[in-house]
Each structure stands twice: as C-alpha cells, then as structure tokens.
Length: 314
Image (tube, rainbow, N blue to C red; front, side, top):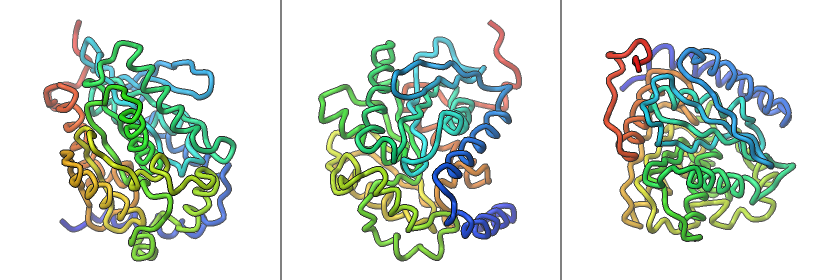
C-alpha cells in the first residue's frame, strides 16, 4: 500500500532534521524525548490517568484508561526506547498512555536507569524489579504483557530471557517495536539501510553501545539475537522496511521460529524506526494490531471503540 501524502511529508521532515541530530548531546536527546512524551500525554489527558509507584532506583507509574474494565487485573509492562541513554518517565508515559487508551488495561511505565551513568545490567535489573513488582502485586503472569520499542524492545527480549533463565513465571506475550536486539551492530541493514533510514544514525548507535554495554555487547542479555528463545511466549514484532534496525527484527523473528515460538513480524514498506509511535495511518494500524494482540493474549475480548464516547456508568 502506497504511503499517504501526510506520511511522505513527515518522512521528508524527519530526513531534513536528521543532520541536526548528529550534533545533539545526550542531554539534548533526553529533553527532546521527554517533551515528546509530555505532548502525547497532554493529548490523552482526558482519557488516561496516572498512578505513580515508588522505587528506590528508578521511576515508574501506571497509566490507566478511564474506560479500564473492572477489575483492572491485567497489565502491560512497557519499556521505552532511547538507546539506553535517553527517555525519562515523561517520555515513557507518552506511549504508555496511548497503549492504555487502546488496550483498556493498566500499562506499567518504567523509566529504568540510563547510561552512561548506569551501564549494563542496570536497565535489565530495573526491568526485572518492575516485573517482580507486578507479580508481587497480584498480577498473574498469564495476564501480563511485556512491550517495548527500540532499546526498550531489545530490553523486553533480554528481560524475558532472564525471567526464563531464573525460573520465574513467563508473561503472556511480548510486543517488540523496532527492537534493538543486536548491539554488535552486525546485521545487514546496518549497512544496507544507512541512506534509506530517515531517523537513525549508525555512529550514534555505536556510541550508545559503548555507553551502555561497556564491553558486554556480545552477551545475550545485551544482544538478544545471540540468545536462545526456547520457551518464549507468543511474540509480535514491528519494523519499518527502511530502518537500520530491520535486520534485528528479522533475526529475532527467525530465531523465534527456530525455537518453535508462535510469532509474527510486520514489516511496513517505506516506514522508518518505531513508526507505530508517529500517529500516521500506518502507525495507527500497527497500534491497533498490537492492542488486539495484547488483549487476546491476556484473556480479554476485543473492543468496539465506536460504542463508547464516555466512561461507563458504574
């Protein structure tokens, strides 16, 4: 399906701003991502409410749709992107709010500690603590989905590897949006899509590897493509055909098939990194598909959004 005019114009705009990103500092990136998150939550402020949760080492909160079905006993553990170096709670709340409004279940937004201040395994430790918190709070593992985009998508995969390895109960499903799953940067698209990708810069990714992995990039808990996905829950993956990280998603898809794990990879032609977050028609379709997938896997019926314009009367 050809890209819409609006999507093509957005792609041109992203490509025009890409050279500026080469000179952005980590602080610049952190401020920009948090601002994007605040813009999204402002749009959804009449549909989603937030409930902060206190942790000693990181920030987190629940995003709940005002239409959330009682009892709200299902959850999505959401891990944001940002190259492991950017993305605070404000940013995480942005897409977390969108997921909450679309799935009508609680979305647990986790602002894990960032590199270079906190290197591997800090982010994975925080993600594991967040998952254990959900279990300790009474959420059943078969009613928990784990979702993430970019670095958060890779972190979601590495988290489930660790959950399995430590013998903890596995979640119901995984959603990975443009997962950064190969911090060795060895996939074919890291070279083939350099000119096609309107947002990602390979040199920036190489810096994030140094900042976060600190020499551990050849380990499966940092680069999940080096792991064994045996025993994984059903997984849904999204990637743009033109992004540098396309080969990461394809490799994860192939490895999941090899491990006999039910999974699907959606590659949207002409789209870029984490395209579901951009609000284009292509992105909206992806969010609808992942929301339906999550609801099915955690044991809920599908929704008819046309039927509700106000919160249900209780």
